[in-house]
Picture (spheres, rainbow, N blue to C red):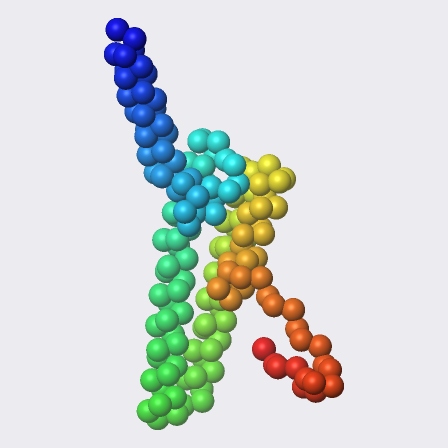
Length: 155
């Protein structure tokens, strides 16, 4: 009887933990590759932030697709019959797309900020800052100019 009770409890615990794990993975809270997992969000907030980010990926993809099209066109024009007027127009258009994309990203961040505590917001910003740096790593300190190293390497 006691043995059956222990087995039943172990099975129930296994089911509870596996369901909780599945729920976390559904929202990317397993700590593997999802920075939101480190923010300590509750279920409702995680769902809202995830929805904002999912929608934003669709919107931002439109901008990156437009930028790629303009860049490809610019490359084509530059390599075939160079036309400075057309190139300038494409560069101006890319500038407009860049501005629109930055405004969209700031809008996304503002919507997310409304859902987070101050500490969660700081962590979110720290992640974004690391992500924007090469490879997501902190920059290495510059080497100082010394007698052995007269010219520090340029990065």
